[in-house]
Length: 139
Image (cartoon, rainbow, N blue to C red):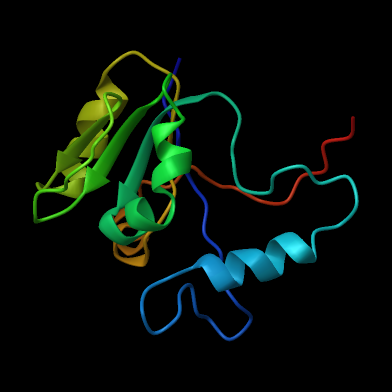
């Protein structure tokens, strides 16, 4: 199975993905409050086993990432991070090289869930296979 790189990003109509402090929580709250009926979760793609996040995304979504015990979570940071769960590791090297290496290994899809700098690097490196979007999931 080919491992695709899927990205998810919240973006406002005026092009922002975070506030002045780097937090996406207010934007996420707005989107969540205005989701169409029937949409359960707009950002989580199916069939992935690896999650890539930047340091700020890690800080905002720490508890959710910690609960993904069956997924490998790779946090991109140039400084060491405290409190990494058993399923997490910190990475400070080249983004493109790591993704190329991950794709060469057996596994499911790879999900890049923020931040902007990481997304910019993978888009410029022509590595994005899919952009996660709203998809209704009815009970």
